[in-house]
Amino acid sequence: MSEPAIRFERLAVLGLGLLGGSIAGAVRERGLARVVVGSGRRESPLREAQARGLIDEVALDPAKAVAGADLVILATPVGSMAAVLRSAVPGLAPGAIVTDVGSVKSVLAETLPGLLPSGVTYVGSHPMAGSHEKGPAHARTDLLEGAICVVTPGPDDSPAVVARIEGFWRRLGARVVRRDPATHDLEVAWISHVPHALAFAFARALGDAPPEAGEVAGTGFRDFTRIARSDPELWAEILVANRKAIEGPIARVGRRLTELARAIDGADVEELDRWIAEARAALGAHEERRISPDPEAKIRRPGHA
Image 1: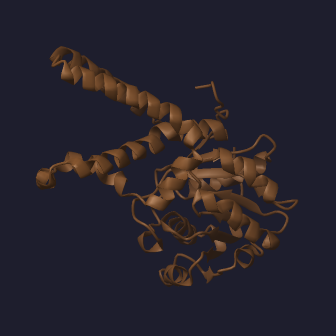
Image 2: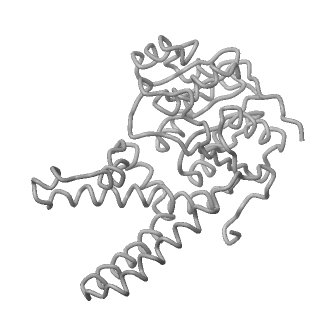
């Protein structure tokens, strides 16, 4: 199948943090839009992004930012997306496509399409890329290179529009997979949200550790705790927004921790050896599934692995 037309006339990024700034800069670097405009709550980061060449124009008012835009990317925290989109609606014109970078899709799929005027389409997206750093000062135009981007089209979305969004993310270097919103939320709960929650819990427990313990910390400690440095406000919103999907995985991990604690308390080396070997095998099985996705594959829905 030939790639659909990707280049846009005017692309608006609403929310110019690390991810939004990286996307905007990558779009300009690859010539995927004639004009890239950035919008946000504060002017100074937007001017900084403009000075760095990440965007062409600055617009504090979302409605002005999206005026004439044929692609709009919501790159604010999930909890702010509906309000920002409502502010942008007066500037949206028929034919525009709205997508987002939110890491929780069900709540957005239920809310955002109903806010749009006639002739404007929403297709959900979630590029699995980022950092514990914040703001456009840390934006990188190669941030999406090799990253997975999950696209969550609705059942009534135009195949041509969905193909255009998928092609857009591929042109930024991402590998595209499709999921329905509920399946997306459960899968990212396991591979992203729960790992962050565990890292936060461990970091919080360090308040009970000996004060001098940090002096002997090595690479294992740094590797495990890196994501615990993530933005608190952002991750508080993510965890609450995906709480239904997170509940089950957290309970299962809790049971496994209890198993491990009992095995350690029993001083059973053979049982611990078996337990850890099974953990490694489970991890390896998931790593083997990390292959190049088929963009034409059917959308995975709950109950269909």
